[in-house]
Every structure is written in structure tokens, then in C-alpha cells.
Length: 102
Length: 367
Image 1 (cartoon, chains in turn purple, blue):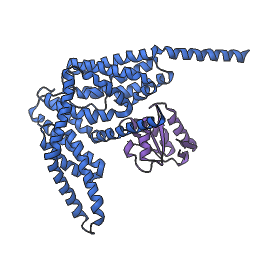
Image 2 (cartoon, one colour):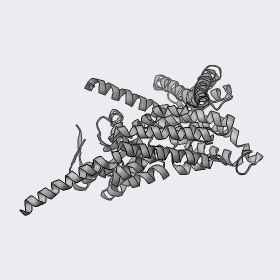
Image 3 (cartoon, chains in turn red, blue):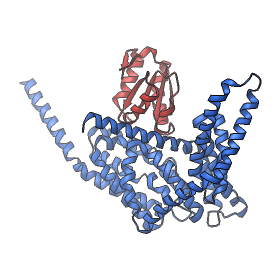
Image 4 (tube, one colour):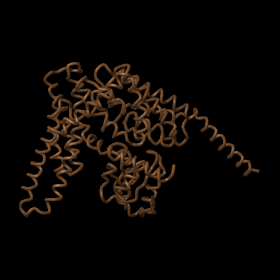
């Protein structure tokens, strides 16, 4: 179980299968709430997550593949594309600098 | 099921996802080119909107050369960066020339394969190159290997892939001839929800569809996975009868799914209530049956699977047929999903109990 301090989060990567559809949708949503805190949000295919991501966000069905790609990074899985508690947790951690665990 | 079994199942699933994702990732970055080709075809071929012989000359080189070369380049690029892309494209020419059908599957095989061979060669040789000879060795190794693989593609890989592609195409044709095509929904809809949607559509169906378009001018294969009907029906049912959580998010999801074409958005609604997959299958089957009966087809793969993209790549005069299939798929999956959700009965009961509980609590606090 890896975890990260919210204040250490600088780069969030949203991953989906192709890195072109749902991840782009979430990237624009998340960056609206996270970029005011100096956190950049990018999207990528789940098998090509770039180095240097502090937190990876992807659907629960893709978490295994994300872990295989970046074993040492915090991977947050979500169920719903809208209004999932996982996004709230991430936003809260960034805002308060609190600990974000998987 | 034991945990061991389920983890084995999960690793099989992520393995299939990865392989399919690899196939899809060769095609998806190039969809702009597919759309350009689809639009030019729909506009300028003899029975298009503005038939124009001069401009219709663009059609064949695009489908025959541009698209396979882009796929071969992208496949090589995925394996071994720009150098891999270049040799992948060189080798793809071999499979293109070997066949009289658009060589998508061949490009998907030979592009990454050639790049992999170059990658192995580079790993072996590059550390041993004498300083100053890097450029010479790198350029000629890519050129020679690419050239050899183009010949291999022409004589070996191309003919084999042509046979395989024929079999697959004949399989689909067989299903169409016997009016059994709707049965593929039994496989396609559950696989979609497991995030194999891109793998199925871009890895399997769109290469088959492109081959059919080259022969017949349109293809039903493009409609199998991309019709937004079944997903829309499920979202509408969730909007009317679903649990309160999904009711709140469904309107936004409907816009993103139906107009934006991002089908992933409805998968979680099914994953949360797996019985809804039956509604997706029913919607998919009835939609496909409608497409089949009305002879609907598209000229290119609509990606993303938005109704707008579907309409844009529908050949002239077929719009009603395509819309009818989408509408039937939506209606059937909506009715089935509503039935499966008990028309919200379970949800109403839960709320009544909650209210009753609150009422008793209120009474207790006031008394």
C-alpha cells in the first residue's frame, strides 16, 4: 500500500485503455479543480504511463495494468466517471496536503 | 470461486486487454486519416453526394497505401520509437503489394515485428559501434532490415495474412448470409464493458469493415460495436429507475455517451449491476438485426461512437436505416433494463424504508 502526501503531488496522470477517450474527459474535469493548486493533470494510455507521475488515476478495471506499469506510484481506482468518491479524496488531499493512500 | 482462480481470471483479462489495447493503439492515433478517407469516399465516389471522378482518385491510394502505412509506422513506433516506425513502414509496403485487399491486419503484424527485430539488433550492435560510425550503422541497419522485411512481407507474411483475413471476412459473411450476425452481440457487449471496446472495434471489426467497403462501398461491421443505442437505453433506464446515485449522474453521462461518443461512461453502470448486461445484449442484437434487415452500413469507422460521427460516415441515402437501428437498439435496451431494474420498485422501497426510519427517529427526538 503506497501513499503520498497531498502537498507532494505535482503531477497527476489519468490513464485509460487508449489514452484518447475517457481519460481526456477526466483530465479536463480534474485539472479544473487541481490546477489552481499547482498540480498538472495529463492523460495517457494505461500501458504507457509516463515516468514522474505522482498519482495515477484510472478505472478500477484497469488498475492491475497500471500497477504493472508503475509499481511504485500511487494508483487510485474509481468506479464511476462522474461523482466518484475517489476524485473527492484526491481533490481533498491536494487541497489540504493530507495523506492520500491507495 | 477461490481467490486464486479469480486472480488468474483477472490476469487473463488484463492480458487480453493489453494485447487488444496494443492492436487498438496502432489504429487509434490514425483515426483522423480514416475519417478523411471516409469523408472523401462518401462525397466523391460515383454514388456519393457530389460525384467527382477527379477527386475520387484520392480514395484508392488512401485506403490502399496511406492507412496501412500509418498503421505499420505506428505499430513500429510503439515497439522501438521513430526508428521502429520507419522500418515498420518500409516492411508494410511488402504486405500492401502482396495483396489486393487493404492490408490492415498485415500492417498490424509486420510493423511491430520488424521494429522488434531492429530493437534486438540495436541492443546487440549499438554498444559495439566504433565512435563516428553511429550514423552510418544506424541508417544502413534500418534500411537493410526494412528492405529484407519488405521482401519477407511480400512473399511470406502478406499471403498468410490475406488467407486469414479472407477466413475472418468469410466468417462474418457467413453470419450475415444466415442472418445470424446479431448473435455476435452476445460476445461483443460483455467484452465492451470489460474495457475491450477499442480492441474489438479497432483491432478486429474495422479491418474487416474496411475490406468490405473496398468491395461493396459500405460495411455493417462498423456498426457492431459503435452503435450508441444499447448504452443509451441503459443510461435512460438508470435515469428513470436506477438507484439514486446513478440517477443524479445519468443526464451528464447521456450527453457524453450519445453525443460525445465516449462509451466507457456507461460501463460502470453495468459493472455496478451486472444483470444490466442482458439489456445491452438485447439492445445490441435487435439493433444489429435492424441494420441487417434495412441493409445499413457505414463507409468508415465512426470514432468516437457518437451519433454525430455515425451520421458523418453514413453513405448517402442510408441515414434513416442507421438511425432506425440505433433507435431500436435504444428502445429494446431501455425496456429490458427498466424491467431488470423493476421499474424502480426496489429503489422506491428502499426510500420508503429510509423515510419511515427518519420519521420514527424524528418522533423519538420530539417525544
